[in-house]
Amino acid sequence: GDLDKVVNLLLSLSGRLARVENALNNLDDNTSPEERRTLVDKQKLLTQQHEDAKELKENLDRRERVVLDILANYLSEENLADYEHFVKMKSALIIEQRELEDKIKLGEEQLKCLTDSL
Image 1 (cartoon, rainbow, N blue to C red):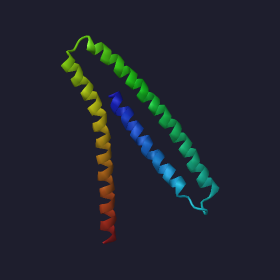
Image 2: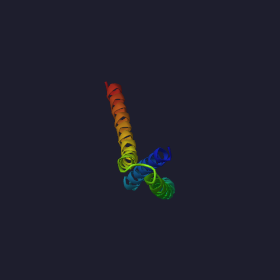
Image 3: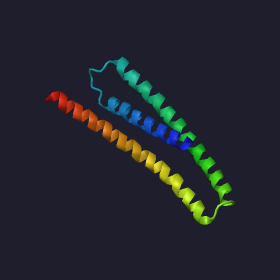
């Protein structure tokens, strides 16, 4: 459960940070200093939260290694390999699920825009 939460948190923060950085990069000369400052503040906050989330992931990885060492005493090599594969695939599948959800959301938004334009 912690793995799901931390991976989703990292993905969410990465996406939000990327959007803020894109917004900052696309500012023009007419942008108010207040709007620029707001975006910079938001970028700083998201950067710190992302660093905190990476630290959570590192702690989770350490806990995973401790659990793996304990399980090594009780499981066969084959079962232990299955467990390791499960944990690795779970993260990969969470990331893939998030990407697919984002693509579905984008497709729905595009479809709505097309429908509205007709």
